[in-house]
Image 1: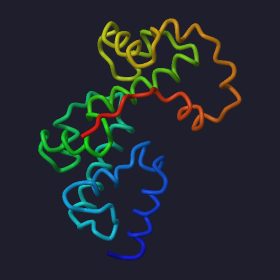
Image 2: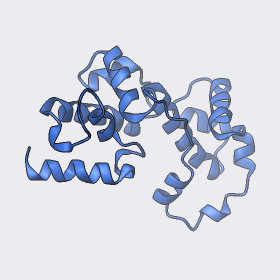
Image 3: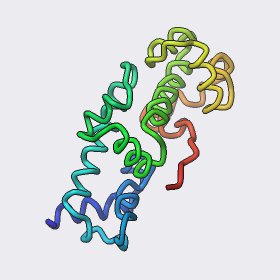
Image 4: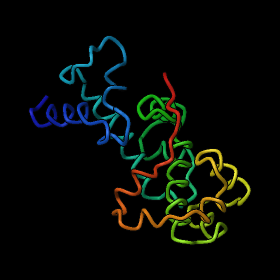
Length: 176
């Protein structure tokens, strides 16, 4: 393995935030008989992480589009079942759960700007207002109308990239 790839994986292991809050590299390294040593990764392991990251980037970019697990799996060049298992093992949640977390994260930003709940629901790619409201309340802890009515002026001085991380909806990670 080249020095540059080894340095990249070491930086990912040292900084979980670069893996989207999860240590994806550790999840892959934890399989089989590996000891957690980056040098012990095979080209297949690295390629799998690259494909999973490509699918995660698709979700992050196209969260408002109708996405399903087979479409995400095609992006990762995997079967839907294998993709779901590996995505969950690496990122700590299922692909659909990750998609909904991203949609709720973006919905919170729209609601802080004063966008109506219905417009927000449609803007983030949800088709059912009832399902959106239920999932929003489940993840955030309050219904979207209550969240929208709150005072969010304290976040106006914070850069959007920091605000997004600070207000990211918490999810319980799945242990595999």
